Length: 251
Ligand code: PGA
Image 1 (cartoon, helix red, strand yellow):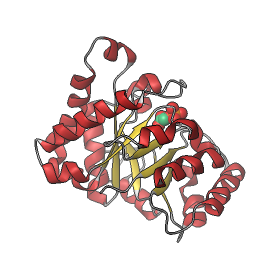
Image 2 (cartoon, protein in one colour):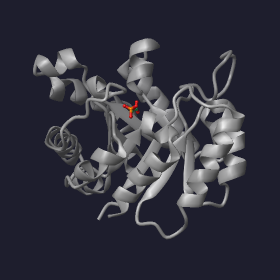
Image 3 (cartoon, protein in one colour):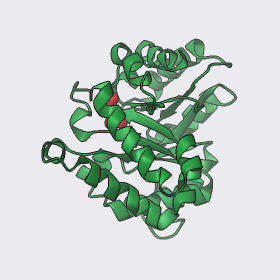
Image 4 (cartoon, helix red, strand yellow):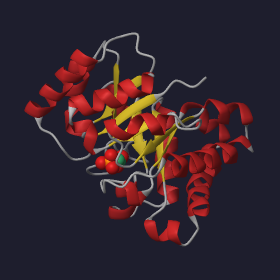
């Protein structure tokens, strides 16, 4: 039985004041003993604030990006061990915005995944197809390529301490969610692909869905057998919405 996980991706939103209010609301609404996990991936400058406010609570936290290098002359980069210094458990890897806007290739995402793992962080590998790719019938191929790059570098065992998030690019921030059946079909395919390498590991892997998840559509997504939670953008900035999604994951 896999525990569900609901993870917020704040993207480049927030400030010290609004973060404090949001995190206080999450703390008030999410105590120990929940059947699902709740976590937030915040902008890097707010990791210290997040650590101070969430330390010792039932809510986890992480970052949205990490350098593929461990240390050195890489101006502006942040290493996995630096994220660990601020108590991060998670780091998003290969989010579609990183891939599309910052040119992150599959091999860069794979290198970042490995850097995160070697520092002891849990990489949350984001995969997903664009609308053009879906309409051309290459969804499976695209996701296979994204997974294979990581499998080649980190090995199957790399997925033993990782999370995978399926985020169809056409559903991110658009209000268009994949139907539960569409998402389930891709999730089943991802699990099957990994099962070809290691069935036990694939059965344990947490597979999140992301793309316009809201309180109103979370329950039907979570009812699918291979959907183990959500990666939530916009709705994670509204405490009541995010908590309601977390609540739906506990059902
Ligand atoms: P969204 O974003 O929930 O706002 O669609 C999801 C994501 O980009 O992780």
